[in-house]
Image (cartoon, rainbow, N blue to C red; front, side):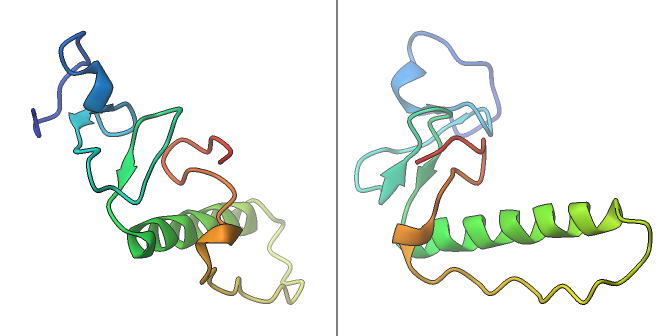
Length: 94
């Protein structure tokens, strides 16, 4: 398994993460994205990545506004993996 950033090859295809270009262990992983191949070792890792990406998306959207504060409440963190709708690395639907 190659943990250094590299291009995928036929030898590492089953364990290569296309989002990060490293090989990631699949055995024992909580969830592996079928699109990009990123493995989330635990449910907590998936929740943390999902919430971070939701915050990043909300901040990017807010930066594109005209400067008016519409009083949008902050995003409440998702705490149940059943609420995770997309892969935080590639945005592919789960």
